[in-house]
Length: 110
Length: 116
Image 1 (tube, chains in turn red, purple):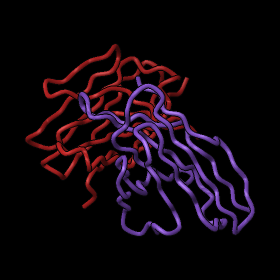
Image 2 (cartoon, rainbow over the protein chains, first blue to last red):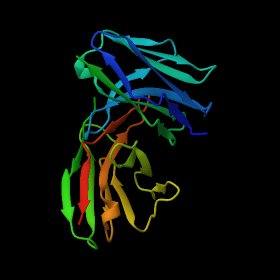
Image 3 (cartoon, helix red, strand yellow):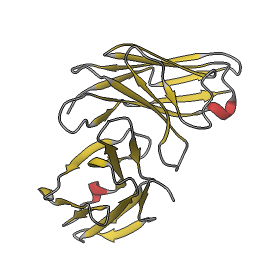
């Protein structure tokens, strides 16, 4: 089993739709969690960190479920500019193990 | 967010030559730097993790003698692809992480290597 797994995608949604991505991790020692977005032929950019109590940044909401070892990202009112690959990442407490998921590609269609 | 630069952004070289890629953290001290490789339409693949002043830790299947990593200071790490071959053509991305906060990784813009 891979350390970090994500929805296989791709997700094709119309503008204005709400879309949710899930990510599961196998290392129970994971302490820090992140969502990145990566545009085609570009480097990943940090979208948001994920806090234990869940957090929201505009149209984006991240949730963490430690018991089930998964994190989620919800995008509301999706825009064309949200089209990208979304990567989740987890890091253990010692900082030596930072693992990315394979990514889920999102295409928002007009 | 923090700024990480990478140089060069794009390089074409002949088979058999060596290519050095620099990764710099511009506004914070990076205790750890990571080197990734990404082939088209595939996910990031971690190649190695380097801590300042110590030898890099390579992922399984990555040849340490072919991909030389030097992390001489808290702001600079280099990756040298030695005797490059066409199959080494890829997008190489570095990232840097400090010790503060959640230890977020910040990525450089990547280097696109094409070996002829």
